[in-house]
Length: 375
Image (cartoon, rainbow, N blue to C red; front, side, top):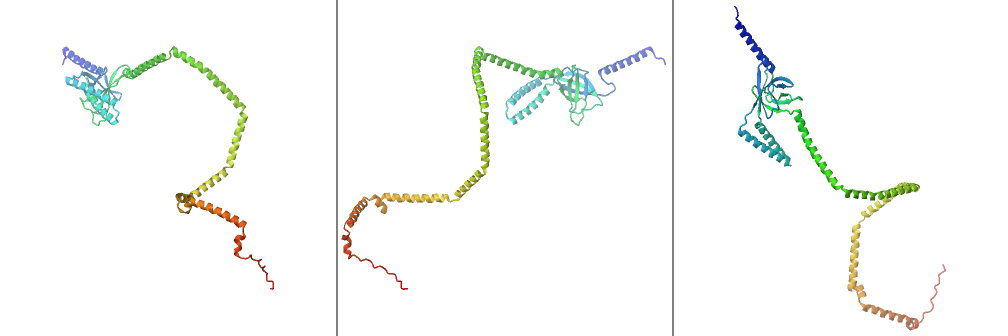
């Protein structure tokens, strides 16, 4: 059977079309003979991600990005996002002003909740990508946009911990890794602000020092240093004299130290005697404490009270002693009796016969006792 030229041309054209399609898919990274699974991810900002960028998992390419689509935001979503931003700003202010630990924890939980809601309403771009049919990952995995030093973008699958495997057309949480310039900018920007603040503070301090150390202050400082110089010289002279004195009196100081050492030695020798004396004193103190000192004081007090009562009675004229002390008649009677006694004694001395004659004759000499010596 003879094939016509038209048929040959048609077959060649079909083969060419198939080869072109396979070449285009190959260049796009698509496998024509494998079953691809499509997924979606939503981002606030894709940071320059484009279609045909690779999708990687654990550093291995498992697919590629197919399409990026803007998400339509309704007026209600815009209003909700605006209200959530205001609430978050208010919560952050309350957190910075709060000092109670429990209140801070509650505010932080509210901030996390509002941030999740705001994240949902601020997603603006949807990325559609596919992975090869034999690749599986957990359902709660995330899609993260990475950048290398040259600015090339990749979409990395960050596996989650779910047991369930992600299914076709699932939407993954979108994350974005800051590029190196962005990370450096975020790191350097606070440092730059602090450096600017520090420079401003240093400038303020320098200006203040310039205001303080004016010409008058400098002259006053010079005068003060000039006045201090004689004082320093006097101190140096006093130090020199002291050194000379110490050098001259070194021998005496040695003698003094030797005497102190001797006194210490003697004190050590008399330590036993001193200890014995202290023990004796302690024994005497214990003995005195053992005595019924309280009772003795009580009896002494009672005796003094009795003497005071007796003296009071004598003073009041009670009793014989009281009358003797207070009645002057007895005094005059004693004086009179004393005078009469003096007269009597004088009269007896002058006229003894007057008093002893009536008593009879004078007695003779007494008979001498004779001892019986017969035996």
